[in-house]
Amino acid sequence: MPAADRIRDHAAQGAATTVAAHRARRRLRADRARQLADLLRRQLLTGAFPGGALPHEDTLAADYRASRNTVRQALDLLRAEGLVDRLPGVGTVVVGQKYPHGLDRLMGLAETLREHGRVTNEVRTAGPAPAPAPVAERLGVPAGADVLCIERLRRLNGLPLSLDLSYVPLDIGTALLDADLENNDVFRLLEAVTGRPLGHAEITLEAVNADAHSAAVLQAPRGAAVLMLERLTHLADGRPVDLEFIRFRGDRITMSGLLRRSL
Image (cartoon, rainbow, N blue to C red; front, side):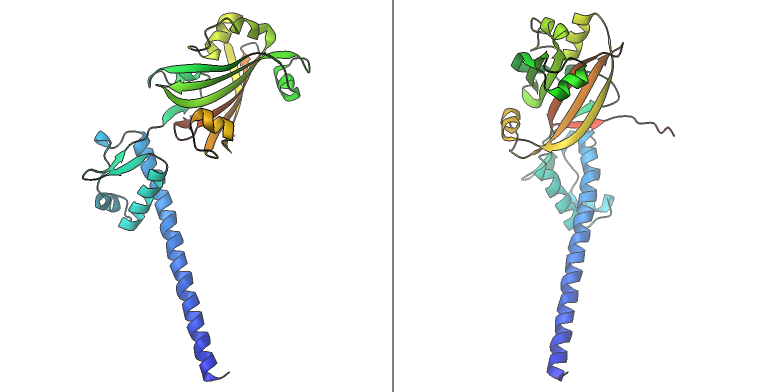
């Protein structure tokens, strides 16, 4: 190979190595920023920063043994989530809040968040409707039988928090039509009309993209991720009485629970 070609090949290999090294450094910094954001998010949500003001970037860099660029990138991630903002002359402050929703107790939303404010409900739909086959099967009613369908937009202190769709067997649901659905959890009403306590629930939790309708109702960006909770609740005697599909705004709720290892 001519000397000129060898020189060009060597230069190209060197450039490729430099680009690869630069990309590797960027990936490493992005990984570290994401990991730091996860640590800071927990601190934000548990009120670890007095007055809602975060320490200076230099202090955070020293506390978490991170570069200042990594700290800035982590704060940018939290800013994009709407949890913090940077105010001139003040620094980075907490501007968002997520409310805790436990997964280890069977409670309605108002019961769960009673320490954080008042939950109100906008009843969007409430009436009988033929049960889709999967709903009928899970509620243990005949295929095509009418069930009570309730859709409510639930707000905490006036802010949209969740869009709840509930299916209830009609022999129980008919009494709910005369109940105060605007100011009560369905759980409390079910226990009142049946005269029996609720027992247990089967739940599935996953992230889904908000469709145009639910995004508009929840006042969330179209396509934003929402937490979808599917819950089938039973009376204490085992009868299924409430199948729910609940879409939570993911930027306003955090799910938690206590899990025990059992082999």
